[in-house]
Image (cartoon, rainbow, N blue to C red; front, side, top):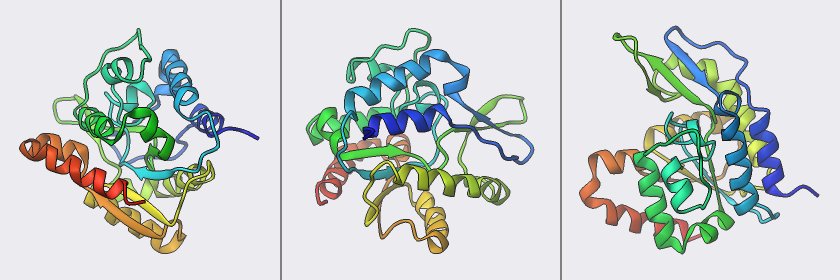
Length: 229
């Protein structure tokens, strides 16, 4: 019987977005673009998911270029991957604000080992989406930024959610990061019936950027809701 680690690694290794995107958008696949990302990702899941424990699903939006879009591990930049998870990435260095919040929260939860034993984090669109601005610079984008973008990626998102649920995840309750993310996931859930109860938490990036003075209160909220399972 395959461990959850083996299932996740197989899933990530085969990730490929075959669809079209509106003009000005592109998809980054770190597992194809940087060989070390694949090795780092394998090391992470073998270290924290090498079992068959059934986990709760925490659903983000889609990876950022400096988090999972680089390391292959959701909400994990290279800094915390090394310092907290004990896995060093030689080919890149990144600092990502969402990662700061998540790992501070995990520390108060009881540490990364305890947290990852109970929870699995990923996204309905598990690859990084970027858009080009008027200056020709590529920026992070969210799958819901435009209706045309959402409609283009929705079939892929449904497929990806079903594949991740099949790892061995609870579906009676799902934790969603970001209120807008929840709204779009509910639109999918209305027809697909993938999840029961939605518990929505403010997105770590929103907290770090706009509510940093209340960070401790938001961590307390996360801990209260995540510990109520």
